Length: 244
Ligand SMILES: [Zn+2]
Image (tube, rainbow, N blue to C red; front, side):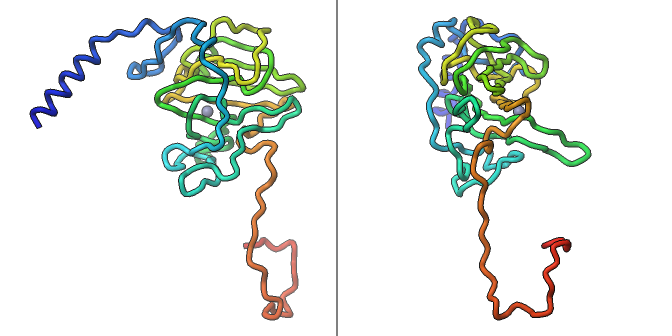
């Protein structure tokens, strides 16, 4: 017990001894979170392209809102890495590695809830954020509750938005071209955010769409076929009746 305590003490002192260089990000939401140290734009040159995730896990045992169907291991049922848009395929989860903490749609109670216009991909350790597809930077700046934000115009009426970034590649400006999977920034919690995550929005023809479900075939539900012989004769089928 004493030995364990001594080890913790030494480890604690060792942790204090190292000092990270000052980060570039603009506004930390809470003092407890320290974004990863920035080493300048070159870090984005060596970061590599976006990984393609074959599955996406729901955070917190799928306890978030609008997560959708999950498997026994909390991976999303029917997850595919790309969503098909008029501008071509876009990554559904353009992060280095994160879980889905909140889905698209209305959350909370009817009187006190609000619409969530994107999906939240969370990782307390941060990580890179990538361009979901090829395009042109339409916005790269700090934007109120969104914090450090990037918007990419993919053409044909398709846009993506990335919010709460710890920082972004400062060479990116309005008009800069990005390739599909290009590292554009790092995950953080700037603006109005309670944890380190990417808030990701996808617009198609001016409408916000669900990045997890857009372009996916509908889920077919099956039920046991009724045994015709036991159906009552005199029950008329009435389409106006609410079904149970
Ligand atoms: Zn969000």
